[in-house]
Length: 253
Image (tube, rainbow, N blue to C red; front, side, top):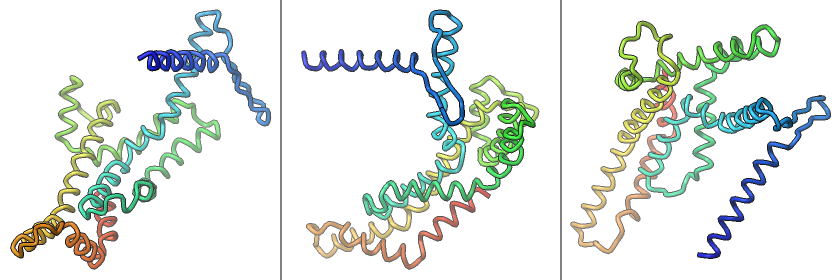
C-alpha cells in the first residue's frame, strides 16, 4: 500500500510539473522566424490565452481520430476484423496490416471528397482568398454530403429527437453534432450486417465439420483443425479478398 501511495504521489507530482513546464515553455522555429511563447500568466487574459493554446494543441492531437470517425474507415476496419474472425486465423493478417488496408481503402473511397475540400477550402485558404472560418465551412460541405448519403434515416431521426430538433426543413438545418453520431451509428450497423453475411458460409463449414466428426466418433479431434484449412481453401478459391474489397467499395456508392 505504501508503495502504491508513493507511486501515486510521484505520478501526480510529475503531471503537475509537466503542466507547469508546458505552460511556461517557449516553442521557437528559427528557420521560419515564428516564435510561440506561453507567458503572461500573471494576468487573467494571459492565463486564458495559454489555456486556449493548450486546448488547440489537444484538438490537433485528436484530429486524426475525429477525421477517421467521419470517413469510411470505421465500416472497413470492422468488416475486415469480422472476416478475420470468421476464418478463424486469430492474428493473421495482423492488426497493422488490417489498419493499413483500411486506411488505403479509405483514401481510395474518400478521394472525391478530399479533392473537393482541397479545391473549395484548402487552396483558397493558403492563397489568402478566404478566412479560416470560411475554409472550415467550405470543407464541411462535401464531408457532410458524404455523411448524409451514408446515414440511415432511422438513426438520424433518433438523434434529431434526442437533440430536440423534431422538425427540420432542409439538410442544412441539421447540425454536425447530430449528423456525426448518426453517421457513426449507421456505419456500425452496416458493418455488423456485412460481418453477419461474411460469417454465414464459414459458419456452415464449422457446423458440417463438427457434425461429421461427431458422427465418426472423433470427439477428441478439435473441429478447428479440419475446418480452418477448408475455410482457407474456400476463401482462396472464390477470390475472397477481391470480393470483400469490391463489396466494401460498392457499399459506399
